[in-house]
Image (cartoon, rainbow, N blue to C red; front, side, top):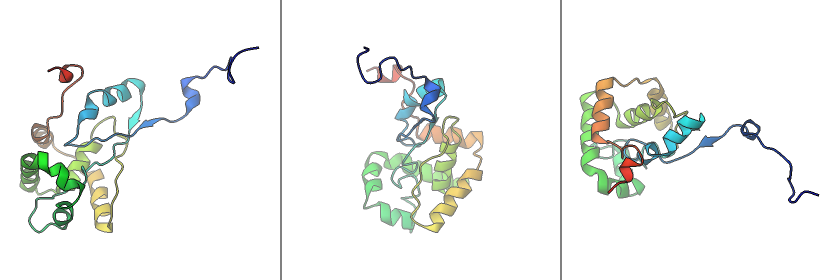
Length: 164
């Protein structure tokens, strides 16, 4: 008699069904690019990033009079902003130069990543949902993508990025 409840049972990857990876991934938090994104690419998995606006930090928190800014200066976005204020200021300036809403630019950048199937969004208002839907149709020019990635460069590939 074989040991264990499933002795002799052979599982194949395709019998597991649909598999996805949910990770924190956005312009400001790009650590997933070190190992998670390359692994997803290698295994043919899609990535469903959560917190695509980094707790509201990438939604226009510094814009004068912004309702998002007023709300986020007191929550999780405020904590994240402590370490990213200069980057967020530059980001919002670049978005304004292009006449684009920061939240839409952030989502459009994330959606443009080949491994990203769909970001996990959490709109609180109809306006936020409509903004997210506009981001789906927004195609960022290569020059703007380059600017964004200069502001938020990411950690670089592993294992080199782990080196001291």
